[in-house]
Image (tube, rainbow, N blue to C red; front, top):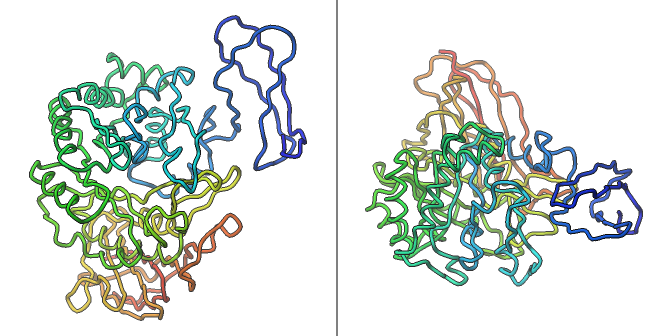
Length: 505
């Protein structure tokens, strides 16, 4: 029904059971309305108990009943992500441990999944949402399934016995951690175990007998202090004893520097952690200044997961943050450093991923939606250009025998893509004027006479995409003429350019 009372479609559903039973009915809408309401009326006499009333479109991802919005998953799939981190960050912790995210309550029959209050319901005074609950129609099984659908490695994050330290900071005594650790072990069994196991059988009963091939598992999110280290050690010992092949993601806290970061970084390195998760929400200037962050990291130490990052146009957690082109451009410059140091930085992910125009608490966000539409931000297109032009090996790209990391506001990285035999260049001109440069591909005898050039740019640093102009800042693709083994390139002001050229000999 539309807000003005106009009926869009109706259907009748006979209730003929004295036991709990699923009933469903279909109807066709005679119009489109972004903010329609579902009304349920009862006729006749008697008593009816109802639970889980849902309304879903037929057109879902892979046409699964009660499935995910096809347009949203398509935007995600188009990025060709290497992994999917779920269910998110702070939601894992809960404001206190009683409302932490518990994966076992999110699997099995939908009607058996326990509703929980969402920890974001009163986090920010600018957007209080006291009626914000989770039904877990989207649970861990669906997350694993989604990762498989889009060809990404699943990366679940589990509570480590600590609630959000910005809220209650509640902790479970180390000697009482067994149920939390068991949840981690059982999750690995759910994902990878044979159908003869308890949790592997549940996975099969839900329609997926084959294992999900889980290789990565996060222990906590943004936790810090000695309390976290004490609990991480317990998790690490138990998980590695039973599943040594699973690589663990550990927390370096909420900030990329300072005393808290230094303590965690030192402790985790001494423990020879597999992968350390670093987060940074900072202004564009920070990202431009930190393109060299990983150049001097220990090549033999733990690997790095840049697990959450986003350039902030205003301030951290400000509702005035926007997905501007300047923010996206600064991330593109920073990411040349991530790619150049791929031997250390194994994984990276912008955050948060999705936001609803009428239901957000945090900005900026990568992909925005309303009830009918969705679009990628300029930041989304930066991420997509990187993820779809990765290459298989890092190549050196130098100017006067120095790395290109911000001098004259120019940033660059290069890779070799073995399957396509292409050299891939990524060049960021963060200055306000065009720059012309010659790239000499040394050691190459011959290139194809044409390549591809992708350009993402805007003359307005504050430019954003919107529902009305979803691709105002989006890449253009053109053919690039190639002569010999040198590329003469003019880079537009405030632009991110990706070049692909094929090596013949």
